[in-house]
Image (cartoon, rainbow, N blue to C red; front, top):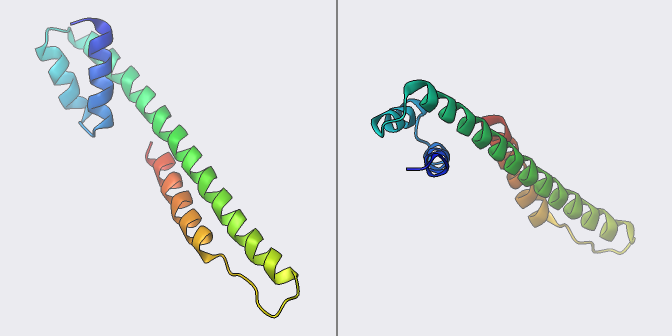
Length: 109
């Protein structure tokens, strides 16, 4: 196997929740020396954490945007002074859930 294919396999295994120890054992069983396997797993782990943090930040930002839109629609219709106004609770709840999921994903990395 080429180094690129081993690296991609390592990234996929880590992203799917496989432990670094078991991934390293798999690489060693395929004939890779232990220091090389350790370096490959460490690098792939860093890349995985960065990708999860980036995705979490994007989800949190998107969720915050939905909350702001929901609050703005509610405040805007209330400010019109009509006897009836629209409470946009859907975007606020959906946005809040999405925002917190993103924040937890960022922390988990």
